[in-house]
Amino acid sequence: MILLPAVDILQGKAVRLTRGEFDQSTVYDTDPLDAARRWVQQGARSLHVVDLDGARSGAPVNLEQVRRITAEAEVPVQVGGGLRTIGAVRDAMSSGASRVLLGTAAYVDVDFLDQAIAEFGDRVVVSVDVRGGRLAAAGWTKQTDIPLEAVIEHLNARGVRRFVYSSIDRDGMLAGPDLDGARRVAEAVRGSYTYSGGVSSVEDLRSLVDLRQVNLNGVIVGKALYEARFTVGEAQAVLDGGS
Image (cartoon, rainbow, N blue to C red; front, side):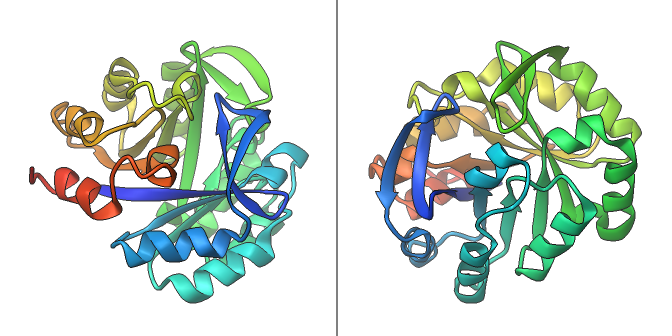
């Protein structure tokens, strides 16, 4: 299992949202590249970069920031935010993304999802963003009544094999991970998934390891790293099975 430090970009800065609310953002770095450098220097094996402006507007806004990060990072970079057309996906790949993270469009546009998978295979990851056990869409700004298991079943049927599960209720709250949700996703996913939301300590990471879900392959962490609750190296040691 690997740690993926988050670099969320809003108005050109590295920020963290609270429970996915755009009006509750905290700026941690005025230049997102500074955040990416710091995590890689601490030993990050991969990065999770999200264009929050793109997620809100429906089209990529910060691909130049992505290019700067991928050009220097020397680790795989997973990129999401506003990737709702095959052209946007190609642009993200051309910007150096190792994998692309799809959200809203993966649920509502079957032809787009099929084309993305046909072109890029398992480099396509779909984010299942959940609030109150139900799917949230459009950059977390719209709430649906669709249970997470139904979403995953639909995506599995379309050939999706890589997922991110985001617990919006816990995002940016440092209140601990949604272990029940992580178990539910593990049971539903045919493939692998990465967990995101609420991690505040190495003990939280250990609780995810202790779930012993073979298809849980990574954990995305943002605020806890920015606020120095632990280092990348300390987190990765736990995920590797150390103390």
